[in-house]
Image (cartoon, rainbow, N blue to C red; front, side, top):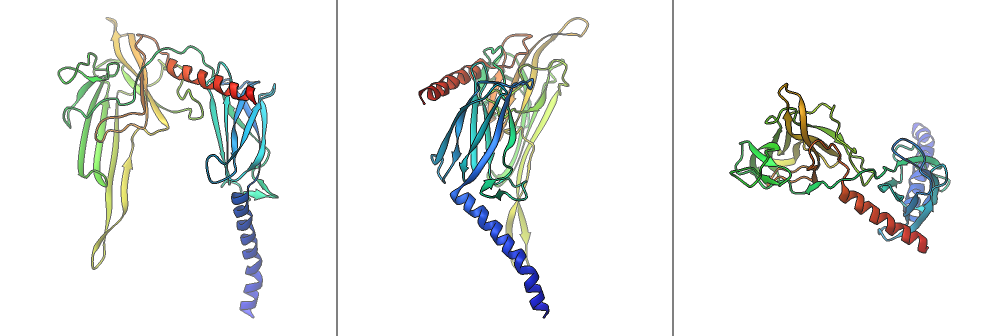
Length: 343
């Protein structure tokens, strides 16, 4: 009798779970309808009308399996995105005079208690806001992806010229020690058992330093427009990347079970804004400086590499809006507008 009661109680719950799983399976295989209002605003929060929407609904397992999205925002900066997809919707938003932005919506939404309802992805019909950053006053910044080779030796401080991308004399033809770098490495196995530390110092220049920010990853213009002269500039940073095998002992043998990892590197979603080459007057007041930014991921095991380093060569110019990025964005926008016009 107890077994029968348990069966009667559990069976409807199991059936409901199976039905929910089957609904999600069918949506991921055959598609369900997605719908949301895409609201485009500028950095001040004002709606951006006549922005081009260029993207697609994913309809299959390959990236080319998609149903295109083409549209233009209305006077309120809005465009209704609606169509069938199996897992993702991507929209690139662009307009002349702005940096393009990217919105990627993935289904199922794990925060939704019921990811699919009546053949529709949930949440359904909500508003998603995306920011278009204006192209304001871009300047030519000095670029470098590989910031510098391995230091001349480990465990010692060396000056590095960010503009020339060289160690300073006598280890290279760099002129200004914009930043001091020290790397320490302990490695038993370079892949699975190592500890690498990179220390960064701006202590050779008064008022020099840097502060860390998160990237505007939705936009082609991922940083702030200008360095904040009133920010709290830190004079030193310490980044650690460490990995060691987790060795367990049984009565008969030892074995590796995963790894212990410490990673405080500047990651792919962060960057630092730096100030260097500072000069002060006879009263100790800051009168001149150079500014720039360094994007992560910042590697320092087997050479020092950052995703992108940009240096403003003009003294006392806090502008961090890069001409190369602005030009690339303009060209992409013109290309998308040509495609939309042809359609």
